Each structure stands twice: as C-alpha cells, then as structure tokens.
Amino acid sequence: MSTPTPAVSVRALTKRFGNATALDRVEFDVPAGSVFGFLGPNGAGKTTLLRILTGLARPTSGTASVFGVDLGERGTEIRRRIGFLPDVPGFYPWMTAAEFVSFAGRLVGVDVATLPGRVEALLDLAGLNGVSTRIGGYSRGMKQRLGVAQALVGAPDLLLLDEPTSALDPIGRREVLEMIASLRGRTTVFFSTHILADVERVCDTVAILDRGRLAAFDTVADLKRRAATERISIVVDGDAAELCERLRSRPWVQAIDRDGATLRIVAADLALACREVPEAVASLRLGLRRFEVDEASLEEVFVRVVGEKGR
Figure 1 (cartoon, helix red, strand yellow):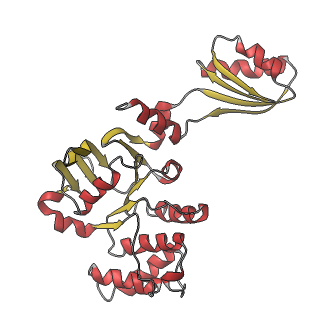
Figure 2 (cartoon, rainbow, N blue to C red):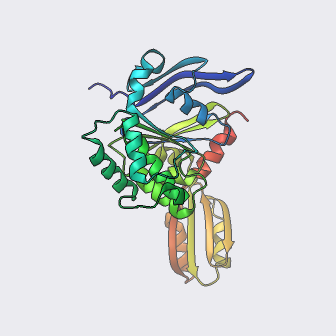
C-alpha cells in the first residue's frame, strides 16, 4: 500500500536574514486531513515558515511542498489550494460578515452561482449567520471566527492559521478552537501558536520549533507518553502524615509530597505502587477517596524538550 501524500512536507528548510538564522534545516511532514500544531516560543521561526508556505518569503535553501507540489517550482498553481489567516487579520469595518466573506470569495474566484450557498454555510460554521451588525462592532473572537470563514471560502485543502487564538478571552478561544476542530478530516489545518493548552485540546500531531530548529515532532499522545513521569495522586479520609512516612521508606518511591489529606507520589515502579498504596491505606484504616495516575501535560513536554535542545 502506498504512503499517502503529506499535506505539507519540508526538507532541510533554511531561512537566513543576514547573519541571523530564522529556520535551520527544518524537516517534517503534516498528515493530510489532520489538525497540526506548530509550537514554539515567540521568535522561534513559526511565522517565517508560514510566510514561506504562503509565498510571502523564499527559503535560503531546502524545499517546501504542498500535496507533493514543490512551492518553488509550481507555487502559484498549488497556492490556490491554500487558505491563510494571519495573526492580525484585516477587515473592512463597514461591511457585514456576509458582505466580507462574499467579497473574499470573489477575490479568489469562487463561482458566482456557488458563492451564496458557500457563504451561508461558512457563516453557520462561524456562528455568524444572521448577524447584521457591521464588523466594526464585533468582538475579537467574532472577528477571528470571521477570519477563519473567509480563509475557507475558496474551499482550500490546506488552512494555515497564524496564532488564531492569541489575545482572545476564554470564551472567544473556545469558540475558535471548536471551529478549528470541526474541520478535522475535511481540511488540513496547520495551526501555529505558542498556547500549549490550545494545541493539546484540538491537535493530532505536533512539531516544536526552538530557535529555528525542530526540537520535537510526534503525535500529541506519543509526545506526552514519552515524557511522562509515573506519578500518583491520592486523597484519603483523615490526616495523611503517617501514611506519607510509611510510604516514604518504600524502595519504589522517588519523591513524595503531602498537602493535608493529599499525597503526590513519583514512583519508579508504577505497577508496584498501584498495589502497595491501597494496602498501606487500608492497614492504617484510612478511607481512600481518590486514586489517580497523573498524565504529563503538553506544557511539561514543551518545557522539557525546549530545555533539552540547544541549551
């Protein structure tokens, strides 16, 4: 069985500005139909790579391709399959949402007969259908959702989003993330951000960029699994001081911390810990109110990876 063509493929991609290197031989593939998280601290090179994919910049060396087509050779042709939302999108404040998306559709050559139905469908997706207020009166979250809608009006196979949730309040972020997640399987979403919780919530695969270099690339689940520490949190009925002291002497306990009735344990042998902790609780006649194995967060993975690479 042949391997599916990636939506985006970059090979040894390098971009220099004078003596400064923004991208240093970056290589990865974005699976088609996925929601891809492109992570990195500010200044890591994320926007530079997006500018190369959109044709706003050229690499110093290396290649970038979209659906198997090299952007340097047939870039104009393939960019018709790309939608783009910059980090600070511009709008005409006197237009309504419908007028703006229709205008964007005409610019990218959407068929006149097709355009009204597509505009209505996209405004439904953005939660803006029937909103008659002009764009100048929109909240930041409404504008971001409208920006995603206009980026989709040409029915792109690849949607590039540069920091789409930055500066949004929690409700605005949730609405934009729900819109992004709804595109999975229909459009490949390339989602650049430095907000780790957003990536953990909606993305399938993640690349972490640090100072222009690829520090990590994997699925969200596998990144967290590789970086996971075996940790247990328990809550008991009553004072956990004696339980803490009893467990501290066990050879599999690497670290233990107590906060009232709560114990947090770092275990060298998780299977053994899962047997012996309940036994110790029962022997002290304490009630076990909660027992859970903690999962590493993407934030922990990010800090560990960026701390390990190039420092």
